[in-house]
Image (cartoon, rainbow, N blue to C red; front, side):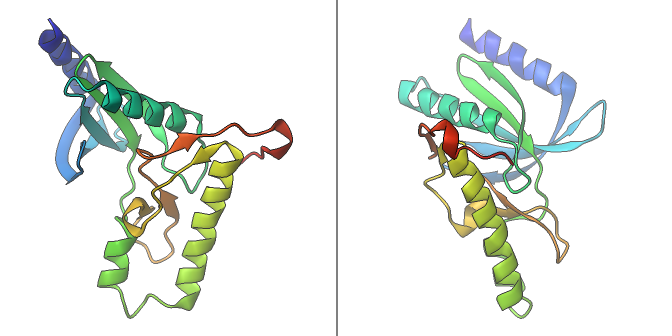
Length: 177
């Protein structure tokens, strides 16, 4: 029954989105580029097999809960979620510029103090917002800092909230985006 339900949910997803090439793979998920069949917008699909693991399911549900509450121009946005008993498909903002690690490696001559300061300011802006929302990322590294496009002036985006947790924030400390 569960396998059939997985297929039904995946069928619903594929009716709404065209699934394209694989963008990457982590320990617990694979990420694909997808396109909305109606609007033509591109997104990233994070496909997470739960493998009957209650702890993984709790961690993924925590990540989804966190992403649902976040709206900031330097944080990747959750667009939609599909869930079945054995799998979660998270539809995320497509960030086409790639990881900051790759950019620095490939554009070493262009990576100067002014670009680093601009990138750091944007990342720190995102972290300040996250903390104001009670979110602690716990995995800030170059691979989780994405560039919004391949343009030289692209915006930084903080991604991958798999290790993040929620903390309680007093009302007088919360700020808006």
